[in-house]
Length: 455
Image 1 (cartoon, rainbow, N blue to C red):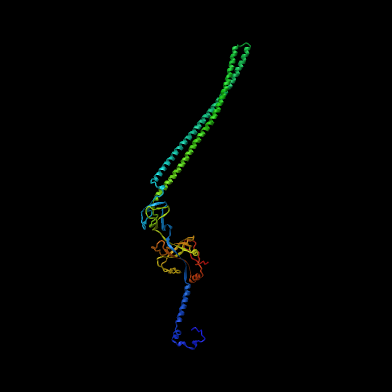
Image 2 (cartoon, helix red, strand yellow):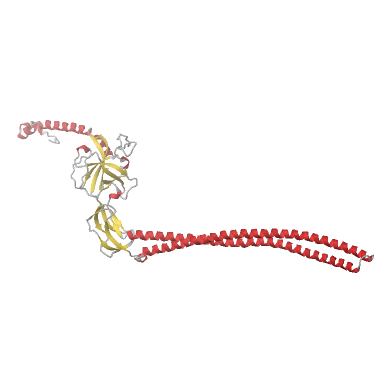
């Protein structure tokens, strides 16, 4: 009763004798209910002290551990036109199998004999380079001959100078002899003139002595001319040496210039040969690109360029391929707030889409249908979705992942952190605090030891 009236009916009337009063006041159900409440409270208090594994939940998708094992597209490094397909979509191909054949669309490579013609140009240029070698050798021999001839000419000129100098000495001696002869002739003439004046000699003898004196004078003049001529020969011989030196210096310089010119032409020819060899190698490599080959074993997913005669540009995608041998992994994304909690080697539980599971977030040991994984890489640059990418690999100490899961299927990940009491986890969530931070081990590649380090 509410007892809101001044007239208290229960004081004047005994309601315990009524059927309803007996049903209410004389039953013991509230005692059982109180015991149940006390038991539930004790159970709740016990549960509050049970261990709870802190975790970070996120979503991701299945990928491959190695980048080379992920689905890829095959591009053509050159522009072309599709000529023939050798496979169908869904076919299995081995590495090196031909997928399709293409042809050229650039007019620079239409010539079917382009490689042979380029090879002929290389041979012609190489022969030209060899002729330059022969020309250079001939010019070097000519240079050597000119140098030898110069030395011989110099020796000949030097000998001529010596001869001229000896002749000058000889003419000088003859000149002195002529001077002596003229002195003797003058003395004899004067003596004969004295004798003739005394009457001891005839006039004829005097004239004979005068004639001899004149002959001696003429011989003296002739000898002086001969001496001057010999000196001129010495000067001419010295001039000849200078002329020879200048003449052969000019010849040798011209020959050397021709050698350098030939060497320059030879180097240019060899450079052209190298350039043509590079072009030939490029043409040969390009001819091998007319057949698009499978880069690895796998299945052809989809032909991205269909039909025959369809043209495409350089680097355009032609066909998609899925490698047959790969090791699956899971890529997931965590919030920036949770990034400091994730380390390489950390344990993670994964639930794959399409695989039933019973998950108890705080008690991973009681969960069923989840698979173990470990963190192998943490991206340090934020993704477009505002989160950080984390790559997970199968845990070798846990159950193997299902072989039927496909690349690209979804997955839900639970990163396992520290074990804390349930009351602490409730208190943390009510206050909006992040999970406990902890320090990883010394080697981030090994599994870190979890220690409480609350901040």
